Length: 175
Ligand code: MG
Image 1 (cartoon, rainbow, N blue to C red):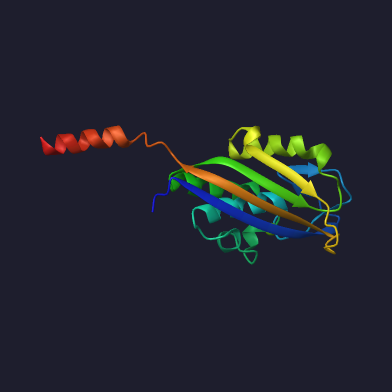
Image 2 (image 1 turned 180 degrees about the vertical axis):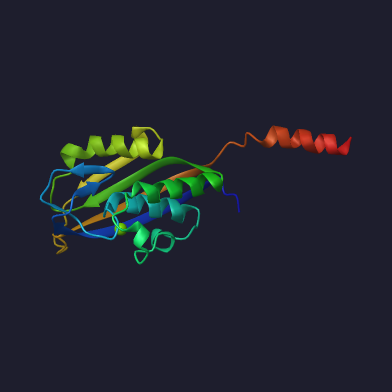
């Protein structure tokens, strides 16, 4: 069904581990611990990928890129994101805007929020002012050794540039 707009929601969490580079939103942070996981552990890109896939009712990130598959070991998570973007484009949609909340104790995201927004803008090819990057600390949640990301995304139907040529073809077929 070709809906005019579609909403997507994604959530992810990863545990901090020593000796792993910290990647959030496609950026690498200078921090003694990183996020463990089969890929590069980029919790924000994983949640964005799942939000995009969910918006078009596609299989989720874990189904498309199973952690059991050795080819995704240490993978750059932008690869997962690019596949989600390819799928939403193929389904006939573009991104209107995206909002996110990161939940982690450290490092503080505030000073890096603009840089993350700029990188995500580049990866998604949408303006930076269409991307919300918010951060909270996990008060009372007992998740101090984890980073959590929540993402919502709004898609809109692409303007159908192919409509005119198709109309012409059917007109020719009739004559
Ligand atoms: Mg993940």
